Length: 112
Ligand code: FES
Image 1: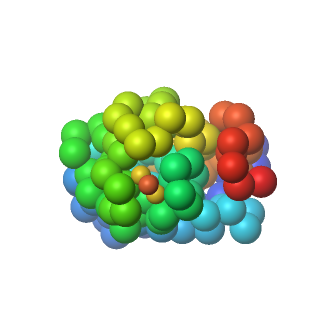
Image 2 (image 1 turned 90 degrees about the vertical axis):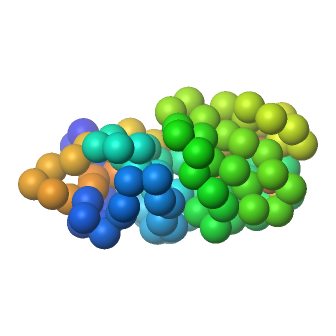
């Protein structure tokens, strides 16, 4: 990862927790699943709620507004009412820091 952004210390993100960070001006939701960290766009594709304010269940994050669940591994919308995937961002753990690549897997289908 050449242009990764250092966003937080790994110890600041508990397993099973989510955290909102900014990566190059884009709101990103970090989720820690045991010793892995995943990054998805923070804006729900259903009605724009902040996913980092939701709940983590395994490798899923549940939107706090209407309860849609997204895979933090793929960004896929797994349950309604959301139907569109959120973009994902590559994550690297380096020397206890969380580094996020600002290039998303695909454009956000609602938010540019
Ligand atoms: S805003 Fe996320 S499910 Fe409706």
